[in-house]
Length: 176
Image (cartoon, rainbow, N blue to C red):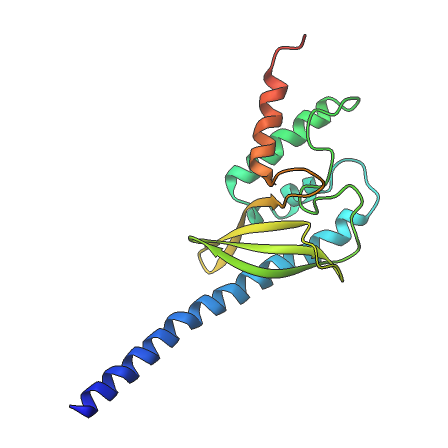
């Protein structure tokens, strides 16, 4: 009887340990994916250029984003390009959550939210998170679903997809 209880206890401990390990490896994997993306993107975003740097992702690495995020960003980019004298869309880099980005961003804490993961992103050496990248598994890799902007300077938490949706609705409103 003691052996059975011991074996059952050992089975329980080992199975609970196995349940934790995949979550830890998932968190490490998604954090590496997001850090790799930022390591690629930031130098491009810092180069002087005409247009918006997030357009580079849409052209060079569109598979980093879900179809919904790609589509919303593409619509915003096209609207901005058609109206160069007016702000009709994003007026900041939505990936860096800044008009004046720093030279290096660091993927930090990873939080699981259902099947998705939120990865906090901050400027190197700073504690405060500028943005969180929301990613989900896709096959044996990851895909970015959205960017979440934490509350700051009296503003409420927001996210890129909601912001792009509001901007699109504003563009469709009749002008007074």
